[in-house]
Amino acid sequence: MTMRVINLIKRAAAVLLFAPAVAMAAAASVQLDKAPVSTDPAALQHGAKLFVNYCLNCHSASFTRYNQLQNIGLSEQSIRDNLMFTGERVGDLMKIAMRPAESKIWFGKAPPDLTLVARARSSGDGSGADWLYTYMRQFYRDTERPSGWNNVVFANVGMPHVFWELQGEQVANITENADGTSKVELSLAKPGKLSVEEYDKAVADLVSFLVWMGEPVAEKRKTIGTIVLIFLAGMFVLTYALKKNYWKDIH
Image (cartoon, rainbow, N blue to C red):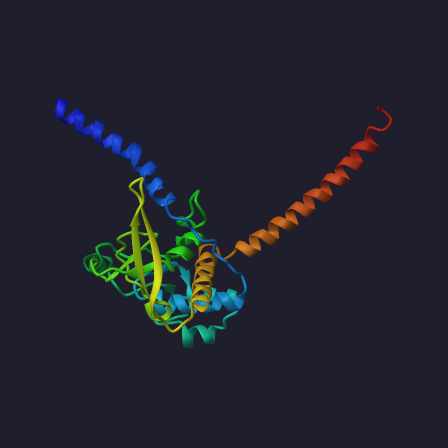
C-alpha cells in the first residue's frame, strides 16, 4: 500500500470522525422554537388537509395509508372526497407520482418521505417537532437561490416555500458577528392570506399531524403504559402484604 493511499485513508477517517461534530455545531447555532403540538382531532384534521394539499405533491408518506386517517376522526367518505388525490382505494399508501430520479434533477435532491420526519429530526437541541415548526416559519426571499427562497434553519435548502401565499414574503437582514458567525433577522415584507398568529397556528397543526403520522399509536401506547404501571403498583402492594403475612412468625 503506497503512502498516497494511506494518506487518503487517514483523511477519510478524519472526515468521518469530525463530520458529526461539525453538523451538530452548525445546528446548535439556530434557536428552535417550542412547537405547540396538539392531539386534538380538529388540529390533526386541519394538519392532514394542509399536508395533502401542499406537501403530498412532492413528498410521499409511504408508510401511512389513507384509511388510517379515520383514527383522527375522519370518515372514509370524507377521506375519499377531500384528501385522496394520489390513490384509488382508501387503503392505498400515501405515495406520489413523481419519480425520484426526475425530482433529483429538478430539485438537486429527491424530496424525502415525511412519514417519520418528526422522529428523524429529533436531536439534543430540541425535538423533531420543534425543528419542523421553526423551519416552516423561517423562509425568506433570496434571489441567489434557484427557487428564490432560503431558510434560516436549513441554509441553502432546495425546497421552495410552498406556504408563501399563506405566510407572505419575509426578507432577511444579515449581520456579521465579531466571532465570524452571522445573525439573520426576518421581517415580513409582503403579508400573506393569514396573519402571523393564524399562520403559526396552521404550521402547528401541520407539525402535529406529522408527529401523529410518525407514531399513530402514541396515545394508545401511553394509555396502555399508564394502565400497566397502575397494575404493577397494585401488585407491589399486594405482594408486599403477602410477604409480610408469610414471614410474620419468623421475623
